[in-house]
Every structure is written in C-alpha cells, then in structure tokens.
Image (cartoon, rainbow, N blue to C red):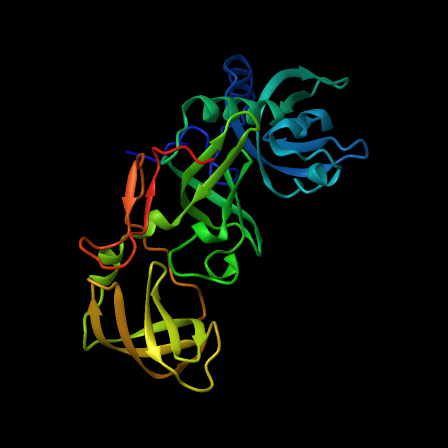
Length: 312
C-alpha cells in the first residue's frame, strides 16, 4: 500500500517530469500534471520555466487558485521563483520566431487535485506531506500540488511541545493523517501523533536499568518531564539548572503500563544535538478508523482518536 495522495504528491516530491516537446504535447492532450522549477517572474507577474528546448509560460491568472489557497496577493506568485511548481499544459504553440512555447496552469493542477481530495479522501487517510511553514500554533503542510492543510500543534505528538520547530523543519517530508475535512470551505485539517505509535509500542523500545538520551519538555517544582520519544515521556525528580529544550541523559528506574508512567533519574546535561532525530513511524499508509494510545487496563483516562466520528 501507499499513502492516499500518491497520484497528487506535494510540490517538490513529484518524480522528475519528462519535459521534452513530445511529452509536453502528450501532457496537454491527457491533462497530466507535471512539475518544474519556476526560473523567473516577469513584470506582468507571469512565471517562466525552462522545459528543455521549450519555454514554459504561466500567466498570473494561472499561477494561483484563490478558492483553494485563499491567496491572491502578488507575493503568492513572486514566491514561486526558484521553487518546484506543479502544472498542467494548456497548449503548446510557436512564438513569433517559431520557437515552441508551453502555456502552463498551476491553478488547473490544484483544482484537479482538490476535486480528487474532496471526492475520495476521508478522515484517517495517511498522506505524504511537505512542511511549508511553521507557526506557534501549528504547521502548514503541502498535501498535494501545493494545496495547504493545517496541522495544529496539539496534534503533532502526544508529548507536548512549545513550537512545531521542535519537531519539524520547513521543506521536510513527513507523513500525516487527515483529521477532518470541511468540504464546503475546502479545508483539510491534519493530525500526526497517531502515526508515532501507542504508549506500549514506544515503551517497548526501552527497559528499566537502561540509560538513554532525552529532551526536557517541561520543568515543574516537583520534577521535570523528559521526552524519550515524541509519543513517550517520563518524570524525573526536580533538579536545578534545567530548562525546557535541554538534552539530558536519564536512567530508567521503572516503566508502569498500568499508570502510563516512566520513572527517570537525570544523569547529566548533554550538548544540543547536531540534527533532530529522524521520525520513527509505526504506521506509513492506509486509512485509520480508531487509534488507542493508552495500554489495555490503564487506570488513567483513555487517549484515543475515533476517525469515524465527525468533527464539529
């Protein structure tokens, strides 16, 4: 199986397109979606592409689809320069000098993708995404052909973070799950934590008596919450000099599934990591219906996501 948007990947993640003249003409006949890097923006805000021996031109009116993205300002066109941009080929013609020119439309590609998403996607669908912007309240994801969906910060992981940059970087390829779809307003909201595994799946990677690396996520008077994995944190006794975001080594004293508790002892502070840890996904494709984070028989309130229940 593959993620549910395999036919409409995010911009920058599409396999290299054949931009030969014959391929461009075939794409125009079949309404195929291709991709290339916009090399410049003209004074009339048309985008230009180098497609082998053919020049690609995308008028401003074909560069954005406001009903999809809500973007209609000039910056939404200017910012495409130097970036991979999807498009359909509306026509191929010859200019005054006889040179071939392809008339391109990103708007048509996005409309085709959005029509597919609104008809076929459902909550729980796993998608390949690309992070396009990070804000304090969440991450904006390209879920296909430049169509942007929102991933709220509370849906990124079970372990709480203060900003999405603690998990992602702009341009990063990630997986995410459709949380809800507002078909009337053409808005799709995503979630991510369900792909990172249940409490037991994460806890099984550790054992009492081990010393491992962790990240301080919260400092309280009674102790510090240390993240061992994005979906698993433990509590260590209070210690002076710790701040949120510090890397530490911790000794695992105990792991209790019945209380979803991991008891830790801080050994020492560590230098900041050179690079963020790779994301470890437990689920990579398909459509989820019901996800339960909590272990069976846990005494604490159950943490779960039911994708079959409509979100208000």
